[in-house]
Structures are given as structure tokens and as C-alpha cells.
Image (tube, rainbow, N blue to C red; front, side, top):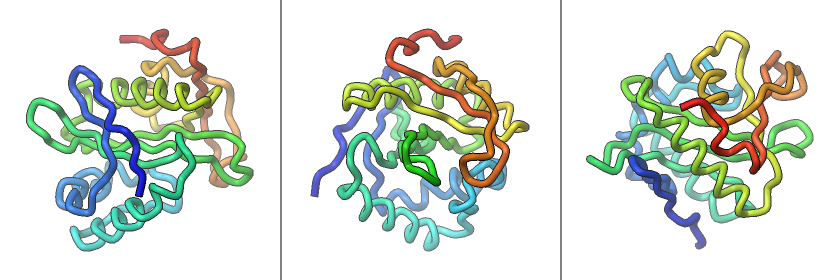
Length: 182
């Protein structure tokens, strides 16, 4: 079973999920403030056992994904607190475009973790040969839109192509890394 190399930033570790992360992941994926913005196939997780089942599916799928696709835990280096998750996956329905998404526990919002982790995973994806990544956000998800811009993504329009929803679309290419707002 292969795994993604652990990625580090000044403050964070991006690593493969483990089923034992379930209690720490519940404040991310069980929070209504997070779940309301997730894609239709991911709903709020209501208890540790359900979170364990979700993580089991992600852990089992990870070795079968072609890099840079995957899902990862985001952990704070200073104390090991799991603050969120990241994913890179092909967008439906045509699976032509790679989506970068980030999900943080609400008490970790406002510290720049999503921006820092998003930039790091983007750089890694570009090292794997990906030429561009996209993020999609509902028009009222102002936090996600601001984070996409801070990562260095540029707005490219609005579409209903993905997830049968009206979404704002942002894109980043290798030359865009480092251009985002602090």
C-alpha cells in the first residue's frame, strides 16, 4: 500500500488520514458551519462511528488514486491538533479538471491554515505534473472565496457544470503560486 509523502509547512503537517483520526475529524466534518458548504456527496457526520466509516473509505481508496488525487489530514505542528482536511480530486461530471478543496474545524478559522495548506498541496500537485487546479464555491461562501484568492487562485467565472449547482470557479497554475494575498 503506497501513501502520499508527508508534506510540511512552517506550521502544518499534511498527511494521509488514519481511521484513528475519527474523534479529531468529527469537529471538522460534523460541524454544520462546515457541512453546509460541502459537495452533495459529503454530508455532516453526526458521530465518531460514522466518521470512522468515512475515514475507512478514504483510507481504503487512497492507494488506488493516481497522484495528485487524494484526501489528507491537516495537523498543526506545534501541538498535533488536527485542524482540517484537504482533497484533490477530479471534478464531476467529466473528470477533466482537478479540484482543490479544504475543510477546517470552525475554531481553526481565521489563522491562515487553509491558505498555507492549499498553497503547499498545490505546489506538490504541480510537481506531480498537474498544470492547473480549480476550486469551486457557492456564491455566498465568502470565506472559501477569500481563501481561494489568498492561495493565489484567480476567478474564472461562474458555472453550473459541477455538482449541478451554481458555483464560482477559481483556478491556479504553477506561475500563480506566491501571488495570493498574505
